[in-house]
Length: 111
Image (cartoon, rainbow, N blue to C red; front, side):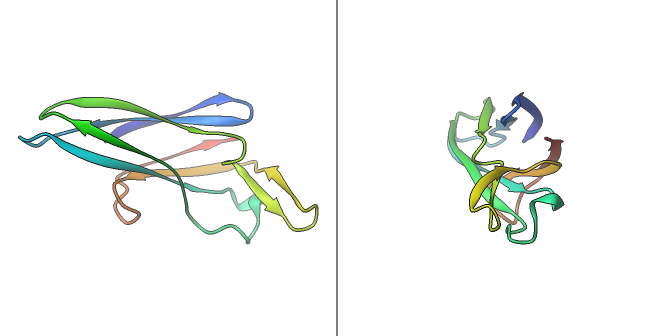
């Protein structure tokens, strides 16, 4: 997999990456997107959260670009003091792979 991170709008982001079937048979892959919130989000957030996935069917040697959207809700945290969802600000870390312990594509973006 190869990829890039881009900001789509002030309230969200798009994670774009390429998945390639390097095998000799047709196959499917489930690409999983994990997000880590900035430190400013507080201690209540888990260190890493599954925020999206896509099942991709590929022929041998085929590559496909995948875009996964992170909307405002995906980038927000629950605040105990205000009892509402609030958009987090700072550096978000993104990891993409086919399992939570196999994420070869990693990067970050700032909101």
